[in-house]
Amino acid sequence: MKQDIDQINVIPLVDVMLVLLVIVLTTATFISTGQIPVNLAKAKEVGDRQDVPIVITLNADGELFFNDRPLHTTSLEEALRNESRDSAVVVRADKTTLLEQFVALVDDVRGLGFQAVSLEVIRL
Image (cartoon, rainbow, N blue to C red; front, top):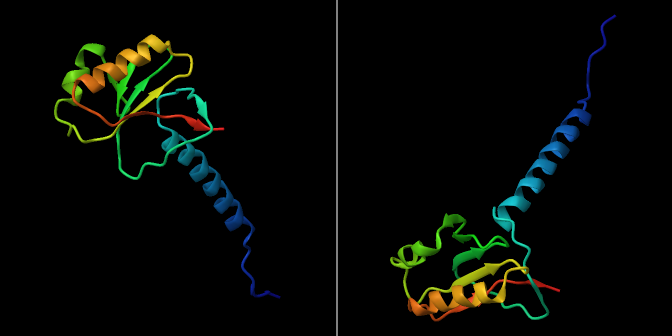
């Protein structure tokens, strides 16, 4: 005798969906944090920005990145030349970066005419 199947086995479907969920959550964390590993400093008060700023990253080795692209120190002016001077500039600096390097970077950016320069930190 042949028995008709009147139920759908959902266990394989649930397994596949859980695997897809893990993949999506894992890749979403890489996308949101950026691709350059920077150990940001911590602060109690953090401002919220609504616009999309220009992001300049200074890692622990002193390397500069402009919107996640490698940048040599001499070409900072060239990279910012076509940007609006009213744009907000966010500096992501590693917490182990020398204060002198950070101040020099902010001074260079402000010297190019950008007035809204801020530091990205992590809320405590």
